Length: 334
Image 1 (cartoon, rainbow, N blue to C red):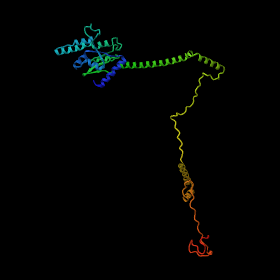
Image 2 (cartoon, one colour):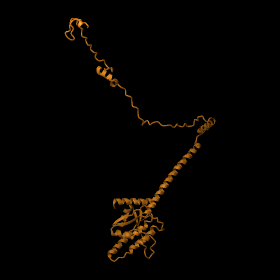
Image 3 (cartoon, rainbow, N blue to C red):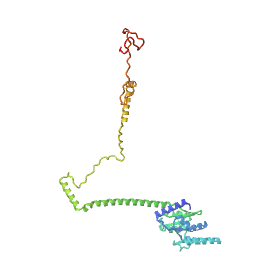
Image 4 (tube, rainbow, N blue to C red):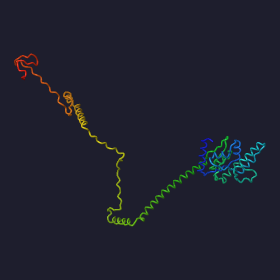
């Protein structure tokens, strides 16, 4: 058997077990047609049936089906040997009394199996039979009975039919009923707990000690005299208000970095440069006088040289050239 088909059959039998109560050993009803085809394909019927249902089986055959095997006509030795093989396999199964043995002629497989599976015509498989039959009419009729697994042989392959629509409807109804029962039980449990809590609250007054009773009585007297008085046994209510931020998720404040002396000097110089850029006259002065000194203040530039006055003609003495004075003291002022 292929792995995929085997897995499908296992799940299907589990569904039959949950919805209809099937359990091992499974009671498998076989008819004459399954026995003959299994012998023709040289199949071990018991092992194949157990493999399909994935569990132990209890093979059974009705009295009418075994009579069908005895009534097979034979004309030669080969047919007689085959008939003996069929009967030998049927004898290994348990005989299921259908109540038709008193009749002169056995009933058909359809009538016999239907009377065994659903004797009262209620469309229920009360005894939980698994039916293995080769007749199509039997399978079509038993699909209308809820909870009947059907097995047949197709080209030397034993097949378990999918669950019929009737069985699926019953299974779905059972599942819904279980869900409703679970919800009802849960609601009952919840209401029961509430009742027990209320009863416990009512019984608190009975179980209080004498000391507590005295305090409660005293508080009642104080409340009767002065309703605004604060009672010792009265619990203070917590004032509800907006909650603060989560300290773990709040943003932490960054520590203020202290500036060093060198950093302060640099900042001052930057401020001076910014002021010089804004003031064009200050920029021209800065170009002439130079950049600020080390102390941060602008340094004084070089003083202008005074231009010497030329000597007049009446001063006496001729000038031999610019900057040369004759006829007088060179060190004297002009």
